[in-house]
Amino acid sequence: MEIETQAFGSLGLLVMVLALLFGLLYVIPIPLWIAAWASNAYVGLFTLVGMRLRRVPPVTVINARISAVKAGLEIPVNDLEAHFLAGGNVVKVVNAMISADKANIPMTFKRAAAIDLAGRDVLEAVKMSVLPKVIETPRVTAVAKDGIQLIAVSRVTVRANIDRLVGGAGEETIIARVGEGMVSTIGSSASHKDVLENPDYISKNILGKGLDAGTAFEILSIDIADVDVGENIGAKLQIDQANADKQIAQAKAEERRAMAVALEQEMRARVVEAE
Image 1 (cartoon, one colour):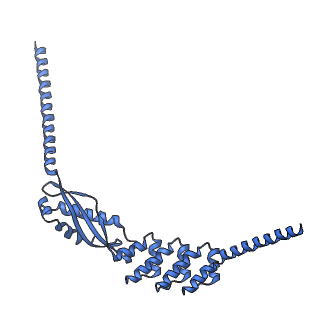
Image 2 (cartoon, helix red, strand yellow):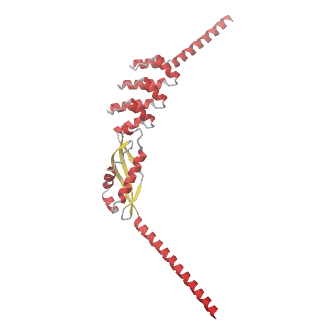
Image 3 (tube, rainbow, N blue to C red):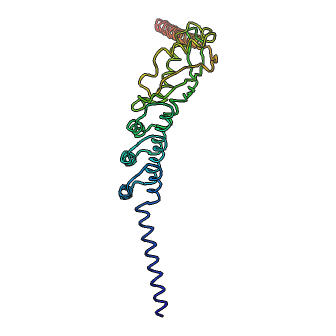
């Protein structure tokens, strides 16, 4: 019995020691500390413990710092932790800074964090600064001065403007402004044939209006992808006007007929009275 009691006691002690060891490894992530030290991204043990207490995942922050150091960027741990606590995406910010550095685009951590906290995809913005994006507008309907309806689609090539990402308008504004410019340009054309023969006229006219002002993008080019001829709105309006005039004339004729009938009835009544 004594041997069994000692065995159970030893087993219980072993379980307690293992539980304590795992608890310490959770609170003090020594493997992560070693990985940071080996990557020249040293972080103090007490800093890691503080992250645990502040409910900041050390793995996320330290791995991001290691990636930054390996790419030649020095980002303080406190800045990464503060950005995480503010609700930012630490990994995406660091990856954006690495991409910007490789593309020779000036990008500080403060600016990248501000863009991220503003709700923009900072990594996508950096990629768009290197590789412009093509935005296709919906089908825009406009009527030339000769009354012919045209339906046009354009492709807008834009590049992200890092300096205006915070507070700048988005793609919807670009699409709306380009659509408005297309309607205005087609509407000012004397004939729909002018637009069909020279669609570049629309592009050049819109591009010169500075439609990217106040937006987070820089418009590089506007290309008319397709122009279709729609209805003859002028002729349709003339037909509608003719029908309206016809109805008005019929109404007036009916009014005159009714007045004539009333006058006839009145004269008959007078004749009867005279008899």
